[in-house]
Length: 74
Image 1 (tube, rainbow, N blue to C red):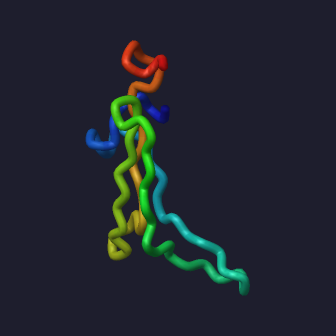
Image 2: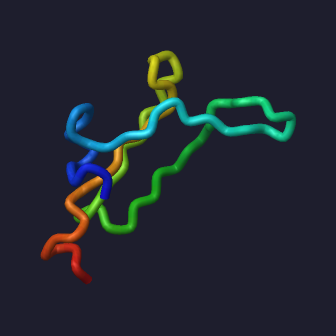
């Protein structure tokens, strides 16, 4: 999933999305709030959410993992 690296490996290794926004009814962009990451198989992939709205990346997350591997086949 993603680059094949876990999110803990950070920039240059793990895949990521940055500057997440929600579109309100009035077509106004807003930062998402109260996000709750949910991962069903953390031994296969994971997600690291960062809600630092002051950074140039805004609300962002790293994701990924080895995915298809002997421990993740089932």
